[in-house]
View 1 (cartoon, rainbow, N blue to C red):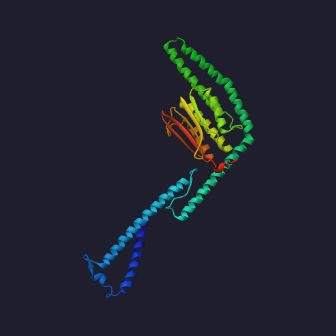
View 2 (view 1 turned 180 degrees about the vertical axis):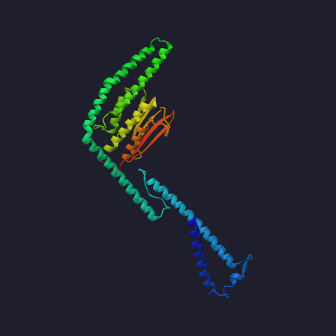
View 3 (view 1 turned 60 degrees about the vertical axis):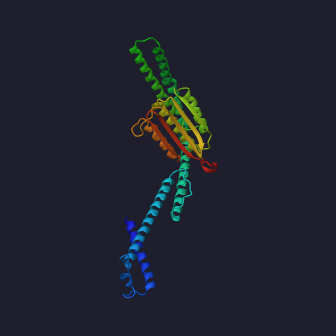
Length: 342
């Protein structure tokens, strides 16, 4: 409002000065004799001088209003483009309505953000390679040892207990005992799911000379032999950096682990496809879902997914509807020209 008043006053004085100059050219030097016509002569009972001032005021108001509207439109356009700058898939050109200097500044900012994103991806890749060189062998060996021992002991015992309970529930038992056995069987089955989720986390960090699609397929084939729900999948070979493949693999592990622990799903769909120069990883289940702000049971895993997505400069979304299911989707921009960060 203050800027509008200031603009109105400035325009009023500019138009007043211009009108004064025109009157001097037409009527000559302002004297009582030459300029009395402006006061003495009326149009519709109003002196010409008053009409001139009124027209100047109206014209100043209209121009000020138009300029304010144009400025707001430019501000809205600029704000929209500034918000888009942080998106990995932002592409120009910036449309008309933005001043040339600001357009140039926005373009330079977009280039800088893209450069920083590329640098972050390269640093992440270097970090992964450094960690692999220092701790990978010992860490992988220890994880494999723990996974093997848990599978050979606790997991097998839980499986045996589940089979025995299933056999008992099929025999003739008092209704109360049968109900209790059924409840115990469900507890053991849930413990089996928890154990399988734990074993899933204990898999090696790296893909071990496999592509992302190959690693995910091995993971799914292994899970299909052990879980109670159906897993549909579509996997495409996509050229990604080592860091991107590693992080996407771990995101898939985290999402599947959450499904095992909490979702109670009957179907899971996993997609790894390339669309519009983006690698898209999506894991969807038809389980219990959760309230985005109310359920903290899976918050740790979801936070890990978010952190890994940010580390490789990609976008992600986690959508969950209670009693409908959950979708975890990550989109990774593929470097133009097929050049990947090694």
